[in-house]
Length: 173
Image 1 (cartoon, helix red, strand yellow):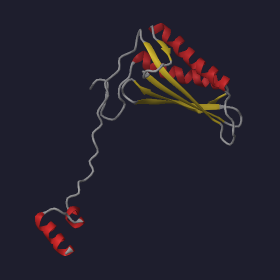
Image 2 (cartoon, helix red, strand yellow):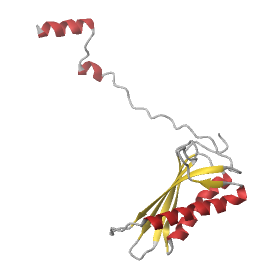
Image 3 (spheres, helix red, strand yellow):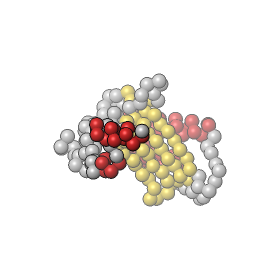
Image 4 (cartoon, one colour):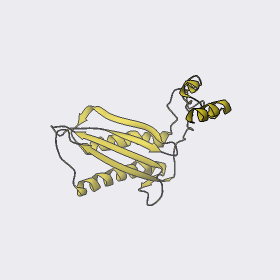
């Protein structure tokens, strides 16, 4: 009975065997990168920035207390506002709405209490924008490290940016 059903299904083209399907596999073709639009210098804007800070202490089980985290966060927001003042830009945390920018700071503190770190910049309707690194030369002060990373990022706000993927350029967009 079972053989009759299989023969009937094969005759009617209802069932394809794995051997029949093997010859019809599609080859994977990556989708081309779609360049994001060039962003002009940002002026006179009230920007919403979601700031996240992560600290790593290799080989140690150490965490920052809430007061230190808040102070560090307030320092970054204060520096963004001071840097944005000449351009007429202000920064604040989003409150129940999406942010314009998502800024993720990662700071690593070594055994000698020296710091290196990075800042990942995302948002502006584009997703990932870029990462700024200050990892070659350690800092004695993590606050100076955060200030320099923030300064690096603010250049993008001040001057604008374009997609850095291969094939994308400021002139071609």
